Amino acid sequence: MSCFARVLLILSIGLLPNLAAANESNFLQSLQGNWTGKGTVIRRIGTSPINVACSFAVTATGPSLSMRGNCRSFLIISRAISADLRVNGVRYSGVYVGPAGGRSALSGERQGNTIDLTVHWAKAVNGDRAANMAIQRIGSNSLDLRTIDRDPKTGKSVITSDITLRRP
Figure (cartoon, rainbow, N blue to C red):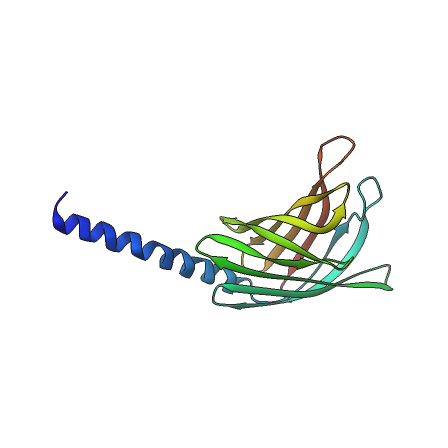
């Protein structure tokens, strides 16, 4: 390999983390804004889904994303929900606070328009402390939030929350 080719290789390897960070920051920026929508939530696997209406304010600053929201059901029950994510290279990590409270750890990566995350619950939920969460951008004005957990009786995956949001 020529000296020039080695220099180019070293420079390009050094630039890759910066390009990935810029790409992730651009993606996070595309999620910024106010979102409202509806969906369903299952509090415990085996129970009926609850219809919810939600609103979120999403703020993106560089490699960080903050989601602050509220979901309500039956017109009287209202719960605050939040997520704070930070990207380092292509790896996402952060904290999720769901309707039951407690700070749960998030970690994962983005695949296309979806941030795929593993949730490590603050306490046991549905018999364990692990689940999956996806934040998917659909077009420029739609966002899908989905949580998938494992049924402790059957071992099958169950969608425990599925909320579709739109920008007003």
